[in-house]
Amino acid sequence: MDISDHNRNATFERLLRPHLERLYRLAYRLTGSKAEAEDLFQDVLVKLFGKLDNLAGIEEPGSWMSRVMFNHFVDNRRRFARRRLVSVEESQLPQKSVESLPCADNPEQDAERLDDIIRLGKALAELSDKHRLVVLLHDTEGYKLTEIQDITGDPVGTLKSRLHRARARLRELLSANATF
Image (cartoon, rainbow, N blue to C red; front, side, top):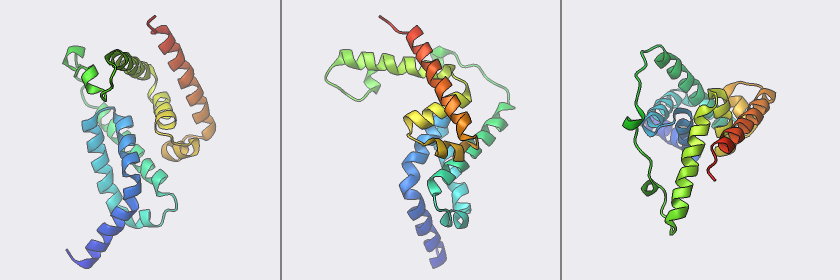
């Protein structure tokens, strides 16, 4: 490796390191699975390395990198949507259990927490892709509406409306599925 390659690698690492965790979480939120998130994350890192000159001149690289990831995700989704779909039975999906939660001292609270997580996951799955994305990015990942605008290209007013509707629908779904 010559010195210029070393400098490019060091510059790339310096620019990306503060954003890696957030980018990976975004990949996971977009894909919904660890394996797909890792693939998306790796693809985007390769793409970003190729755009290192652009990246070095950007004032807010986090939002820009998130936009690159979102666009790559959308492109992949469109490409794979054209392929034949294969149904997966619920019995084939990995089952969540209390053992998968961080250990607490109260098994009853763990079981309730797992039930809440499963209910929330099902409710989120009921939302449209656009509503689910905005609520996950804003409420779970802490992105500001202006950052989500940079990522998706949608106006802030539209995002506010989607966020409001998504939250209302989640409340509706969660209250309808509440166990008493």
